[in-house]
Amino acid sequence: MTGLLTLVSTPIGNLGDITYRAVEVLREAGHILAEDTRHSRKLLNHYGISTPMSSYHDHNKERVTPGIVERLAAGERIALVTDAGTPGVSDPGFYLVRAAIEAGLRVTVAPGPSAVLPALVLSGFPTDQFAFVGFTPKKKGELARTVEAMAEERRTTLFYVAPHQLIKVLTAFGEGLPERPLAVAREITKLHEEVARGTAAELLEHFGARKVRGEMVLVVRGVDRRRSM
Image 1 (cartoon, helix red, strand yellow):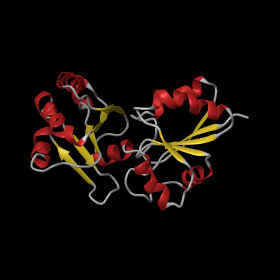
Image 2 (cartoon, helix red, strand yellow):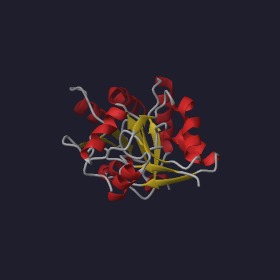
Image 3 (cartoon, helix red, strand yellow):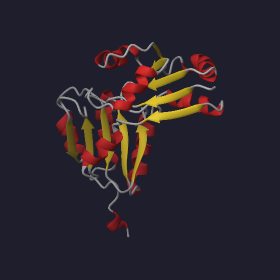
Image 4 (cartoon, rainbow, N blue to C red):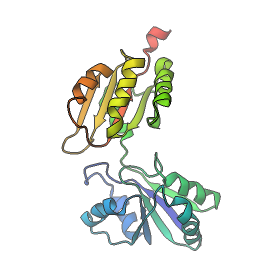
């Protein structure tokens, strides 16, 4: 009998945002893989979950994945979580999922929180067509090309942005698409949740005078379809 790898979505902020099934899976699993065990331990302690846990992240994924696949093949049930949200989305969980699938092993999901959809609906931008692109590029040239590619994009587009990158990203949009409506959703579901909307210049004025912390999603409104017809 083969084991089972379950991708378990965990809260992006408020610890109450977890499904009953997710808690059950984490309690009943033989082992939990977490991106940052210290971070995930807070969630497990909150729900009284004592399942053994070890780290699975970008720096050890190539080394530990073969052993995890062997354990799954031997019949173990393993749960995979990320620091916040759904594992496998812009995090190293994708590497393990791919390896398990290639080995013919069972993979399922206990769906739940993700920052992408809340940011989308809170932006106030069209939701009928949208694209999630992942983290914004770190290099200035790549970032400029990304902004340039948005000039004709009709869909609402979402990016993850690291706090220390926000000003650089907004500056790039200000130079390339100064009139494009943007929204920055920050600390969604947490005490200091904030959604700031406006042009890049307006958002730079809003965020530029303070040190920005927290998880952020940048939402870019697409080209007005009526104007492009």
